Each structure stands twice: as structure tokens, then as C-alpha cells.
Length: 195
Image (cartoon, rainbow, N blue to C red):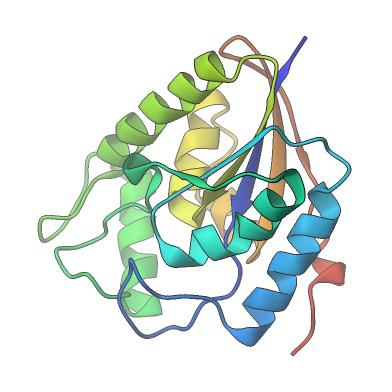
């Protein structure tokens, strides 16, 4: 038997606002419905998420299908890029990401490094693999922390991979205990709702 982890990167979110409380755009909300449609035949057992609203909103329709609530884990939140609690400008964020993937311990302004983010998130992921062994678990997540979790098991999931992902996105990871067996992308960008 295998344990399946479904990494669900959140849908499109407004570019302004608080990191923790930003929701989804109209397109993001419509795409969240598509995420639920894609996963409805996967026989999901449990849905967990980052505490950030955009992640919870992206996976909550799945919980409605299986009659459960989203289990929120604080340490699944996105990497903290700076001391600010608002979204960074794209250009600044890109510069931080570029440096972070070359210097794994790099961080700015009381932010986290990739190493710190990966350590806290992997601790939760391993707990989930143990707690829900041989089950199917959806994780509502974010681009950087998702890439760092996947990259922990396979180094080909790196900055180039992060740049290739979409909002939303879905990756099914198959595990035997804590050993990654394979990863399959389930989201097809051509089915993303056009605005």
C-alpha cells in the first residue's frame, strides 16, 4: 500500500493585501472548483492546509465532497520572505528566490531561509505520512514551500520547477513510508478558467 500526498498550490489571489488573509480572485475561485472536480474520483481521505486563506479556499470544496473540515497546520504556511506581512513586489520576490536557491540559508529582514522553511514544512509532511499512512491526503499549499517540500525528496524540484508551476496546480506524490516513489502532475493548465 502507498500513501498519496496531493500538493495543491492555491489559485490566483489578489496581488495586494495581507499575506495571511488574502483570498482568491474570481478566476481563483472558479479554478478551485476545477481542482475539486479533478480530485473528486481520487477517494481523498483528508484535507490539510496552510493557514493562509487563499490555500484554504482552494481546497475547501474537496472537504465538502468528503464531508470533513480542512485541518490547518501553521507550519505549512508559505515561506516568510521578509518581516513584512504583505506581499512583496514581484521583482523583489524574484531576486530573493534566485539568491535563496543558490544560498539555501539566505534570508532578509527577519524572514526565513529556504533551509528554515523546508525544515518546518518537512516535519509536518513526515507527521502526515505517519498519521495517515496508506491514505490519500490533500495539502493546500503555496509555490515556494511546495517546491521546498518536493525538493527535499527529489532535487530536480528546484527554482526552475517553481517557475514552471501555475496557480492553481496539483501534484500527486506517491510514498512508501517516507520514500518518494513518483510524482505526477494532475493539473492541466489548458483547463484553467480564462477570465
